[in-house]
Length: 353
Ligand code: CU
Ligand code: CU
Image 1 (cartoon, helix red, strand yellow):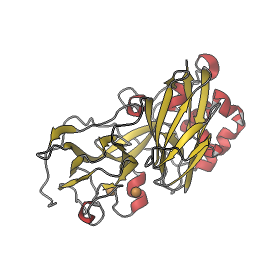
Image 2 (cartoon, rainbow, N blue to C red; image 1 turned 180 degrees about the horizontal axis):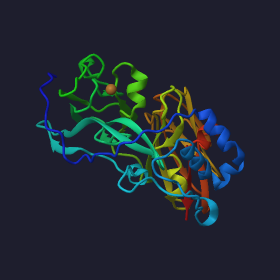
Image 3 (cartoon, rainbow, N blue to C red; image 1 turned 60 degrees about the vertical axis):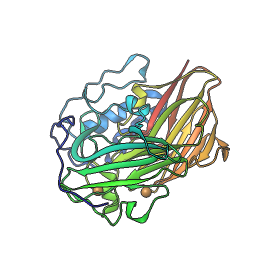
Image 4 (tube, rainbow, N blue to C red; image 1 turned 60 degrees about the horizontal axis):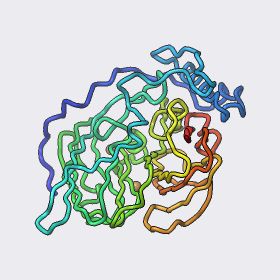
């Protein structure tokens, strides 16, 4: 597809406040958090987040007020910021129309914009985003749909969108670099069904991905999957002092968010998790769910589970669909089984009723 000159910048992308995080290594953060020790995984974890943010000289003071039950931190990121709770259940079907051959066409408009995002209370990260958020929108379609993504680069660096999945070479988002002010149209048939991802593929690659240019790309099988309560989890991290190490880890960007705002589940009801690993700098990530086991569908490309387990490892770019049913009510943690990642933000809770 040919590139064309710059298009209007959408007004619906709010300006983020400016602010920079001070320099401190994650080792220092870990030393600061070590006092909490094993208690962290029990629920006082947010204390570590607080210490971390204080060490980073936050723009906003973080008060030490623990929520009822001791499982909650202290406060949220500023209102109006990225909401991981809403993100987890937001699936973007695109603008849907019918092609002459009867197939479904799904059209998307992605705009790359530079934007500061709050990744923990008071900690800001100068992100590069698709449509103003990290991760970008979760694209959802069915196998065989035609997908058309009009990509406008309103950022300050050259970018692309590289989709995982079958597509022609010139739709691969690698060699057709889209410079600031330019637009490119990606178009392909969605296949194979499964859980995929998209991300920028401009060099230096790890920096372009780490800055926030990634998202989940779900292709449903013909006829869909059985009904379930579905959540998207994009595992990520943030190098807030630019030393090529992550200072904060999360699922869906905001450290400890799901400790403060547990994901709901119901005893006996099927829960389906679309889990994508977009973490940079660390080669391996993982997910462990307490008090339960899950069916693991590797890359989601088969309808029969590959494993029945309670912990799964992810390399960079790896993703899996998990299905489980809670047997017991109560609060069950989920977190990276790398304790370091968990204590730096990658932990959350299912609240099972
Ligand atoms: Cu890029
Ligand atoms: Cu990739």
